[in-house]
Amino acid sequence: DAKTTQPTSMDCAEGRAANLPCNHSTISGNEYVYWYRQIHSQGPQYIIHGLKNNETNEMASLIITEDRKSSTLILPHATLRDTAVYYCIAHGSGNTGKLIFGQGTTLQVKP
Amino acid sequence: GAGVSQSPRYKVAKRGQDVALRCDPISGHVSLFWYQQALGQGPEFLTYFQNEAQLDKSGLPSDRFFAERPEGSVSTLKIQRTQQEDSAVYLCASSLTNNGPGQGFSYEQYFGPGTRLTVT
Image (cartoon, rainbow over all chains, first blue to last red; front, top):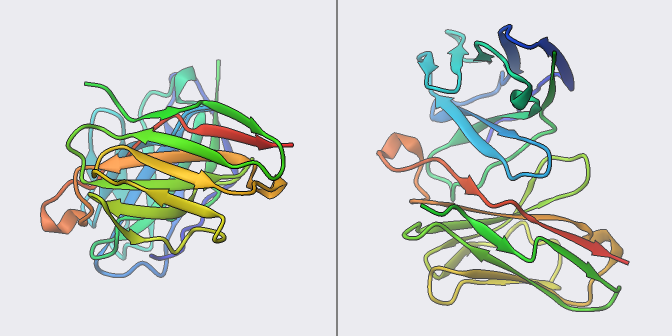
């Protein structure tokens, strides 16, 4: 799986949109971009994934650049409960399904 | 329905003791993963089961680590002769299948809360 690069930390005001960037310049054609988050003292939680089209679900939106070298996770209206470590993972089909986590971005949502 | 459960949630072991960590995956999930998470780091893959078959154990750090899933449901991660460097949170995850999303199968891994192991 391709390496991903994320900022170490970010702050966001409660109620505002949180935009979390991720670079994956070596991503290959069959690799998807996944986002998980980990709230303190809990296991990681799946958020969203995409290949090349933008995706949206009840939790977030995922914007992938046309060249697929980077992406942005958007939490449209961040709440205090969104404070967590967010992991961006490039993950290909055909392997055993194991996820390769990096350091992630610690998002602090402030009141 | 119930999610992935793990027990115990906390375990303190003296160096040299053996420990066994249990994972109850979501019923019907084919795939089961174990990860190790050191303090301040992201989870790191240890091993993977498809039903009862252990298909990937490339992440196990030493032969002191052993995992099994004899009936294709509950899994146990055993660590023999624990060392201080084994102190970490051990996470279990399950998913409906192992195949990637492009093949029309489930891709989402559901994680348990983890077992925090402290070796003194």
